[in-house]
Length: 379
Ligand code: BGC
Image (cartoon, rainbow, N blue to C red; front, top):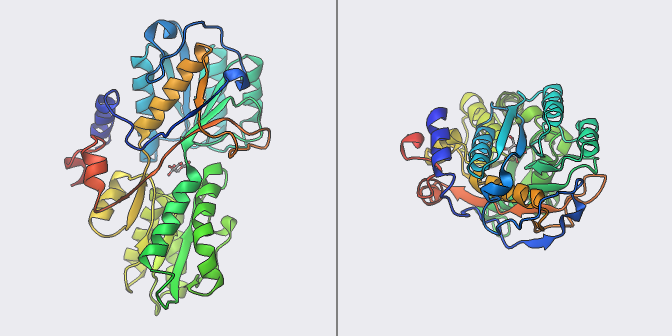
């Protein structure tokens, strides 16, 4: 299944349009990059750096884990698009182990990569290796997840993480008709890894929509577990989310219906649906997710998960490859957000792509018609 998926991602990678829109960008000077680029040719506005500029340039791509589907797609898309643009690529996965990721990045620096693209495991733990990159004048693009507490991060490219949470919260609000229905409704919350800066944005985006209804009693969280630390899930693990959900279901929902489970992403949503199958017999709840992983898209089709958020990894890769080209040619680097992502050292110039709502009614259009999956993969 994975091979098929990756083959498809590779095949479609060069032809895809900007489906999950990376909206209009604001150009800012690349002067804020931590290392200056020495090339003289302008990068194209729409594609990666022309092959001539890429000649002899090496890009290190550090990904967190192969365990979750999306990072396999991210890595494959990055590699294919960078190689198509003429770069040499060093792509590494770190099995969600921080020390492995640090030593992989050290190797990339020692082997004189020209740019580093890093999807961190724990955003706070790369400080020294970031300093090493800065000392070696190697620009760093934080990929999808912000690298914290370091001024060596030149740029950040991601999807609008707060908007992901907003879309999840708005979905629950609309489905339960919170402004009109009498309620009260029972809801539980699961979010992601506390070391992943994104998790807080997903959580906050959704909670900002739903908190007023918790405050006025229309939503009741029977477990009482609402604060970020308590609802977080280490490593975004399906099993961890499942065992917490199993406990909650058997403690609070043996004689009560659960109306919604706000879940930040698909790997954890899978844990919730598994726990429901094993520990719950009441009315089936609304379940949110993110990523449109294959297992979860199948669950949406089967009515076991209500929605997900599609973040087209082809689009993010295309944007990052473009930024690599712009950095290496000393051109202005595309960013469209210069206020949101303060990593504790400074506000990192960012490019935010737009996340797209997905459910059983539109998955064909956004996932199959766009070539992201084949019909067969979702059988
Ligand atoms: C990503 C999500 C993903 C999660 C777990 C987050 O940083 O933005 O798309 O579901 O990590 O891999």
